[in-house]
Image 1 (tube, rainbow, N blue to C red):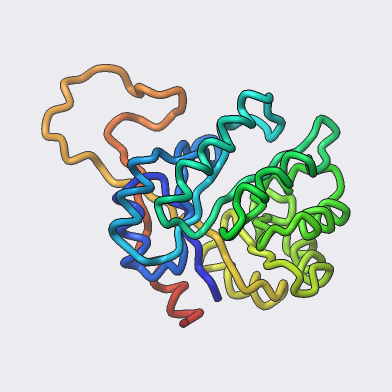
Image 2: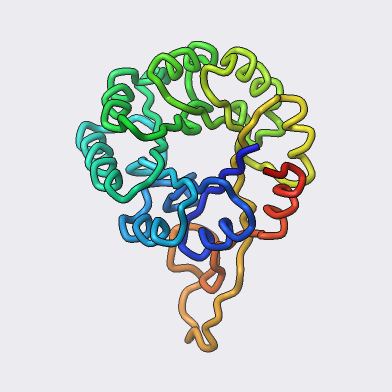
Length: 245
């Protein structure tokens, strides 16, 4: 069982590696479901570990239909990260009809020659999961991340199981979203997946002694200042113990 942890800051990356993750997905902006990480973050984490690092290539949240300028940014980000020694890249592009944008995905796949590639959860909002899976396989992606088109993978078990059967080992189906130690056993048993993706997200309090008052939040979300996204290391370790290397 491959355990992949999405990480959004250096501190969480270090914790995930210590807890037993096999692979890290490097991202920014967890509130949007993940966007492209910073160059400095990728370079620093690469210097810390020889574990597999997958870089999210997503210029913004909101949807998976991108302008030509945004698509150009995606290509430039792959070019920038490739020399850093990452294992691969995570991306997915849809067209206006909700189908896989084969032309643009193919162009990015060719840019990623020699690297591993994951089609991310854009799949979970695509028009036809069966047809899209075949297109993703034909494009040459190495894995597909999916929640089974549900808010949480446990709720999408039926479709994930169908995807694993349809894929027939032509691509790795990786289950992700809402996986925890209470549901992971049943999820794996019923679907047959060999890779799982979960954040084990928690928060820690800031160590600043005096924050000087100010606004409740400096961002656009509801998270108050003084809470820092972190990792439930205990959960990762227990799931690692359930599925030893």
